[in-house]
Length: 326
Image (cartoon, helix red, strand yellow):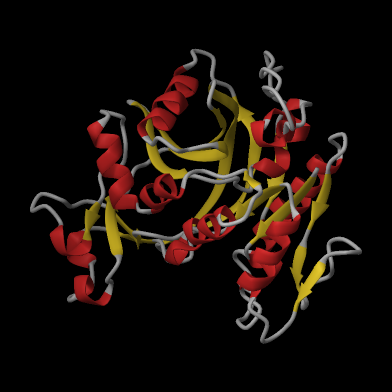
């Protein structure tokens, strides 16, 4: 079985642009971990492409050179594969577009449905869907439609996007620059919540949803900006099953979520609050195998040629695994 791992940044998606310091380390980490886990499975080999400014991840990896359309290269490689695993940022609809491109081939996809990706890529649409399902979440508003009573510490961020690069914190509504709504088209506002930020690594399959690990995030907050420094995969327990139940409710709220996904959560004194849904593998994946002592890729239905994938076992208590991203 040949699996094409198409990680957008490292596979040449930005060949004619500067490589971003914020996304490149995470993309490389995800790609290399996926390769390692897949190559440990019997009868599985990988197909790779790479931006030719980067070291080739495999001796037979296909270089994407300047002036070459990476989407054409990827489409060709997808037709050579039995399975395609697309990974991309949600920004500008890239993840949904990449999944749709791969759907044109004959290969199976390890991916969520594009419709679910489009909803979860938008913070406004995600909050609206969570509200419909009565799932605790961060209230989210367009910049030009802030409620009259919306004040206190305010966070602004892109409605569609990843990372912390454009996330800003303001001490109150009066601190927002005048004309901010027109200057910040496509941005949203949320209340700043003093809480512990965590990420849930979740396996979504047709036969059920499994919380794999609870990951504690290391976030630096300096002068109104945030930086994700790293995380401890399996750094927290779920003794009462509340987070596992939350993961199941979130997956049920977004039909089409599939595979290994991430859910961002804030642990507040009143309980967990959903801050975002990543309909794709996230950097926390890099610590899953070591934390669980189990290869998570072994439980993906798309990697089974015939019949049902093995049932997810009663997983051992995760061991904390530290990942440094910055």
